Length: 169
Image (tube, rainbow, N blue to C red; front, side, top):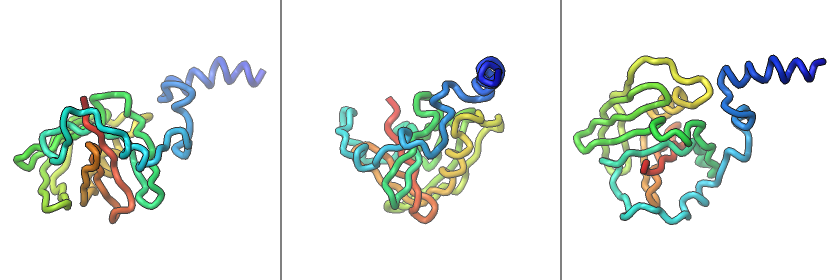
């Protein structure tokens, strides 16, 4: 009886409140959702040219990294092209989208340091089963950046963590 109840009542409720599939209901510690940063950086880039400038490129969040372990936890919104993206313009403004909101702000760059001194967005609540809120909170803390093999790494938390972006095609 308990199994039948779970299948007919609880499981459909779980799917309705945020889990797109059973596999997406796993915990953040799920190792299948983690990849080694070094493995990603070794993949040859598939753009026509090497990107060396942070500006005028639309960057798509790939995941959240731990600098000490070199592990990247893939973003829950990775498969959605219009979610968790950022474009840095040459005029010092930035724009993009989280999972639910349009984003905007201002930044300055000095060497490999970045100062995001204005950052905000529209006020729609973020989708609970995706990571828009985490993206916004982490992004606003970024202080350093690096581009390697067409991947953008934005470091925050005194360099202990990073946001990893790929070029949005």
